[in-house]
Amino acid sequence: MRRTSRLPDTDPHDYEATAADARTVAGTGYAIVNGIGYDAWADKLFAANPGSGRTELKVGDLVGVKPGGNPHRWYSPADVHQVIEQIAEDYKKADPADAAYFGRRKTDFETRDLASYSTLISEIKGKYHGTPVGASESIVTPLVQGLGLKMLTPETFLHAMSEGTDPTAKDKATIDHQIKNKQIRIYVYNSQNSTPDVQAQVKEAKDAGIPVATVTETLAPAIATFRQWQTAQLQGIRQALAKAAGR
Image 1 (cartoon, rainbow, N blue to C red):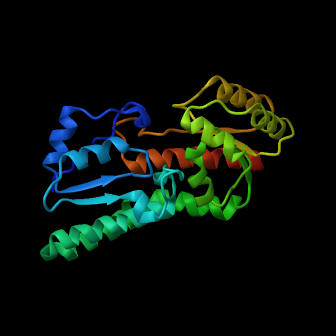
Image 2 (image 1 turned 90 degrees about the vertical axis):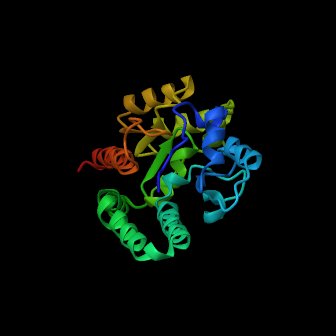
């Protein structure tokens, strides 16, 4: 089975499908989309290119997050494993003769390929559960929840930054207060969406001695695997938490 990714290098929110995308969709037998309004361009392509026998896995539907909810499901460890499970089941259904092989590959992927990813998550949850943190936008929220940390940044601010709208003065004042009074132990920001407001918060956090960790919305570097990308970010968060805790 040949895999083709249409994940753009540009902001996924603003991506516009191309003729090449349409040709790819027209010939695909299995398609995975995020859903939750994140990649609406993909829905339009599938509707315009109905394929007989094509299987579509929409992550939002699978994990029970409706449009308007947080679409960044790849930052939820629980959702990641749920998607892996579903892909394996879909492959088994498409090719029953190789069902045992797909089962083995799923197990190998989760226990070997994602070993460092899973170990870091367990380590952070075990050592730093309940630690209050701040963040620049909502892509961090599912990960913070999965790590057992406590998000203090107002949800309205996180959502505004993710949607590219102006945050309220009240939210910015709340965050300034949290940083100044060290109510958060670390600050996590999306380096691919570093607005003046976020840059100011990063500076304030560093000036206050609060460790700063970074994440990105898309693969960084672009050639990285999911494991490499997420593991590097988890290592950065663990290092920031350790520095904040003095160990």
